[in-house]
Amino acid sequence: IIESNNAIAGAGILCRGTSMPVITRNEIRNNSADSGAAIYVDSGSIAEITTNQIHDNNAIHGGGIYINRTGSGISNNEIYNNRATKGGGCYFRTAVSTINANTFRDNEATFEGGGIYLTDGSHPAIFTADSFIGNTALRGADIMIKTAEDTSIIPVAFTMSENYFSGSNASQNGGALYVSEDVYLGVLRSKFLNVTTDGSGGGIYTFSPGSLWISNCLFNTKVPNGRFVSRYIFKVCSS
View 1 (cartoon, rainbow, N blue to C red):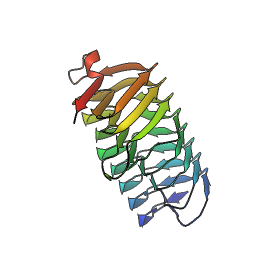
View 2 (tube, helix red, strand yellow):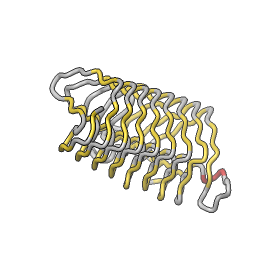
View 3 (cartoon, rainbow, N blue to C red):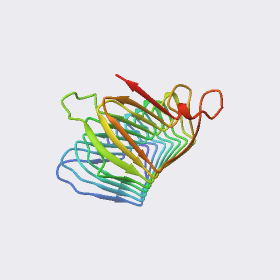
View 4 (tube, one colour):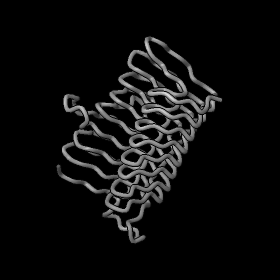
């Protein structure tokens, strides 16, 4: 158990230099930091993060995990009850990571990305078989995909598949996903069940320019008045 630590980054575990740690079968809880309260992986380090319980951590960016300008594998973890301004569960900055078979539940972002926040060209190499349950945020309750923080980053393109979204709520837009401009995203064989928003895009909210390709997905979502209305599942806006 790694608990009740405080730091600027990586209060629970900090990975730097050329380290290649395998972080497995830990419970990491009740830590506080500016970035990556439970785990912070910095540029140059590559971590394998698997089969951990990461919960009740608090940060400004990345309540649970922060991956900064590097690649890491994140698989089979329980990531829950974490809090941040952006990226309640995880925050990825210019990161090419594997995100596979994790459960993100009851994480909160006071601004964007209750479960995951992806920015500055982050594009997972594998993003599959994850569950997102009961996460909350102002925008993108489960996932916020945003490239605009660093305008020098080229648009990103990736595919996510066989993911499960249930019971999450965005108080503004994007009950499950909020996809900003210059993102080219494929969503395949995924389920969106009872994800809601008080604004637009109960399932997915997306901006242009960019592209959203959806195939073999199931949607059952609600608009603010509680009625199922298919035109509110997707909200597509022009910037």
